[in-house]
Length: 376
Image (cartoon, rainbow, N blue to C red; front, side):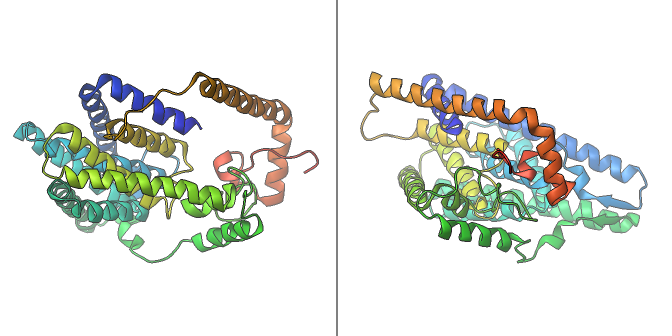
């Protein structure tokens, strides 16, 4: 619900402020990527100058508790960085700088070893290549930046360490496997939950309420939605997603020759969404709050840029009031659970650690317990 509200808010703001907000948004994305790139390069330089016998590439990825979350963020932002490169009005010097930034961003994505990011971007390139001239230009820039990033990665984390006698641990090349990394255990648990409660599921986030030794979510969006919300809800959501993707793809193909900033912005947003949805088939894109925020922003922006066949009508007063009552009741329920559970939170965390081991305590996203019934 919160993600829907965020998407709606961004859609309304984009409709109100127009192309000016597009430029501000892309500028914000570029700024974040510049900061994270400088951070990565500074950490890499410090590691090489420290004369340490080993280099752990995972330690270079700062700002996220798990490098997979970093990869999800890169899946959202890599497609957007190419937008200024597609605009004919962008100065050549700026294009050179942005291509270097995109290449470095690709180098970081490769060094992180997040296979879901690689898969998502490969799917985005393949889909957009089929959507006409603009899509092929976008794919060309991405493949060029990815190739440059791969070259930089090889020089920085293979050739240079070999010359300096430094051993590299968590090397991304070791991730080029078809291993599911224990995902089959999570998928099997989700499938058993679907078979047990196929209509309504176990409830939102309740996959995490059944402990396992691997993770608190199944790393597969469709299975997670089906086991927590039920098969009918999953079919409805999947149908809406496919309808939105297909109508946007048709519009992109129709505007394949357009060089208008709005059409190119739509193209990059669509690529970002395709990449993220592909990654959600093997990763927790719909679970992590930061990724949920980016997903809501991308969807909201696409809704604002879409060319509706019929004008949108404002919601009725009765519907708006009913929605407000519903939100109030939902917030009240959450508040009740907080008041009920917080006083005994420390005791429950300690009991969970004793039952299942202390590694997952106390973070909810790893521990995965929403609210313990009394006596549990």
